[in-house]
Length: 248
Image (tube, rainbow, N blue to C red; front, side):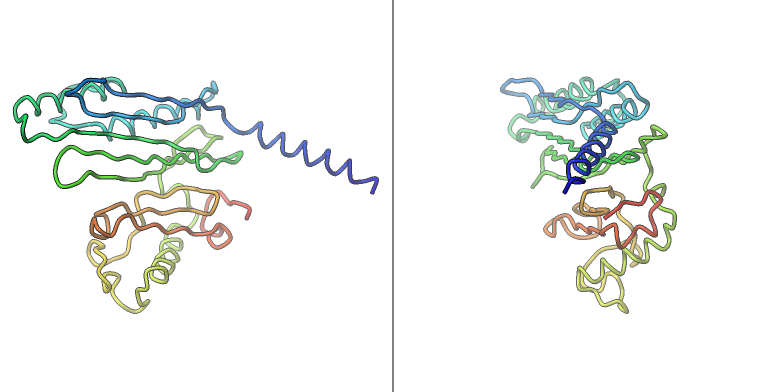
């Protein structure tokens, strides 16, 4: 019984050290112009406050992601930052609405960023967006930004793996099981739309507390009506393929 206070003390130290490795963020909330003939723009993403290489990379990558999501038009104008991108989105709507006032429904853009995973080596931010610029419906998507905290860099998908080829084969097997596609039949046998009838990994994958998550957004491998296709692979099943192992 005498050991109990000592063990608790060691646990508190360990938890404190773990928390110290986490980056510091504050919410960044931005809104577009508030006027009758303005599109709705709502942005809520984390802003890294630490004076470190990875913090600067995170803020830059998030800004680039938001600029890409808000870009609309011929691409000739120079976009210098998020405020510039918001102005460009607003001006594009106003110009179109002025030319076709009875045929231009209200535009909107909503972007939310959430930290979904962090350990001493890695941090992952999930970016969910919805844009509507006319037509039958808008378009929602989810993307992941994975960062190496030690090198201060954003990681490409292939950089997450020690064995990318092995992981792809494993992911295909799990995808077929989840979606009830026979292992010995074409990947599109039940109605999916993989290019060339060949399974491929999602462009959007990221670390989460439940495992590595792959999201195929609408239209990527299925119809709009099917919605996004999500595959979560627990770390204890895929650690042998990952470059950064995760304890489960």
